[in-house]
Image 1 (cartoon, rainbow, N blue to C red):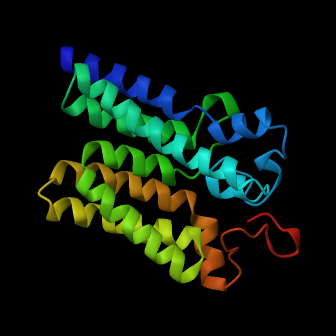
Image 2 (cartoon, rainbow, N blue to C red):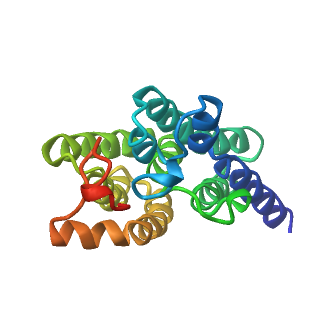
Amino acid sequence: MADFVSSFLAFCFGYFCGSIPFGLLLTRLARTQDPRLVGSGNIGATNVLRTGRKDLALATLILDALKGAAAVLIVGYSAPGFPQFAAAFGAFLGHLFPVWLRCKGGKGVATFFGCLLALDWRSGLVFIAIWLSVAAATRYSSAAALTASAATPVAALLFGRADVAALFSLIALLLWFQHRANISRLVNGTETKIGETGKNGERT
């Protein structure tokens, strides 16, 4: 019973951390364009970049990753083990579905990376290496995220972390679901590249 309670509390704490909408908060503080009005309409770093503010996009990327890592590490300090996985899952769901924004958040790539890095830094390094390689080769943020997230469970298994592989198999499925429109555009050849606002002004 105590394990269930600690895991539930860890999940709730993770959700709270993950639900902090840094992309929206930073653009409001800077009095620049609302990221929900451009590109994909979400609050993640790639979409903040489409407002024309590279500095805010970088800050959003870092903070969205840190909130996932922080949730895992803080919980691990007092309740290592399964509660950390509950916190990671909560943080990811919080970013995707923040209650403060009517459950309309980001697509979870940076938070995915932050949680992964905190649970298994080796798999985290594999994720970022693949993301950077695919992004540099294609200039498609979505293709980079999809490829790196799919490789994550395999990397975790190779490092002997079946527990991490199991959790991130589930999280990767959610990330792919959030990218379903991007997948369709990648197949159709109409996906927007990194730094673009969208062809003919459409939401991407």
